Image (cartoon, rainbow, N blue to C red; front, side, top):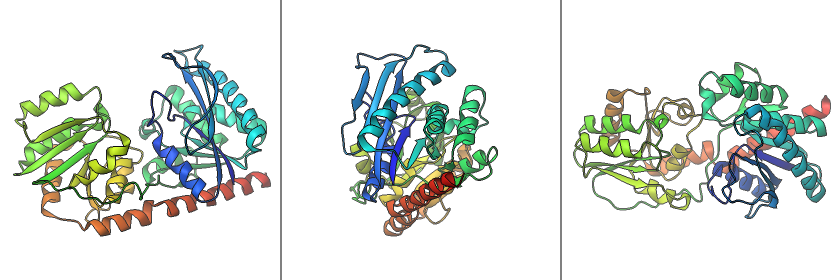
Length: 374
């Protein structure tokens, strides 16, 4: 298949890890024999000194990026026609260079209205995969309009977890479920020696991630010879540091700061369990990355993790925001060991490249066939 991939966010000079799971899926599609090109409309509130225009993307996933400053920085609907213009420019140049695509694959509804417009104009089948965590609650306002119009205009729609699929099915009955994939080559076991039992959490330190709940649960669990490593940075960093001191966790909690993507496998392998206390997740990339490294997981029932964690098989699930239940889960993880080889094998079976790409290829065929039949 000749695929034009349109992401709602993507890697740029000032954000090199943006949309990394979109890039990994594109690489996997290329390895499977598909032709893939990324078209990214990078509309900005502020340019920060970055150049404007259309640029060829660097790296192993080919594509084009169009960047310009928004004429309506505080009006989302006003940005839609601007991105339509940008996508049309990108599409014309891409079609001339690489031919007409068999299918367009949109990731997330943030540029969905514009992508639906493009596909209708050029009579192209549209596969739409949703990832955005903001949709785990009832979408309202502009987000609701973006979401519902994208769903209505897509040839095939996909949710990356069962919970997100159910949310999407409230608006469209035939939404499919295909999870994100994990790069099992990058994320592989390489255990690092350490003393005691090490819990890890990795992600943006923002209120939704509820790392404060995890700190309180860790203190309550009172596990002798256990430590907590916190990877990431964000608005909650100062508050979390003060909370750790007030809970008398000095010396037992390590704030690692932002972890480079290249260093994430080493972070997981230095842990005995990865924890997610987040209140809302559409999937849970850190969970499958840890499992691919043979590391068990403990997660709040925040939506996406329920499609990943099988209690007693690869980890445990606890209610969102329940400090007592999370503390019990931490104690359970210390007492109940998991076999790293079994964890990795199960992860590859469910979230490995061949499994996920086969499903996506089938969806592409369905989208093209269904569109041609209309």
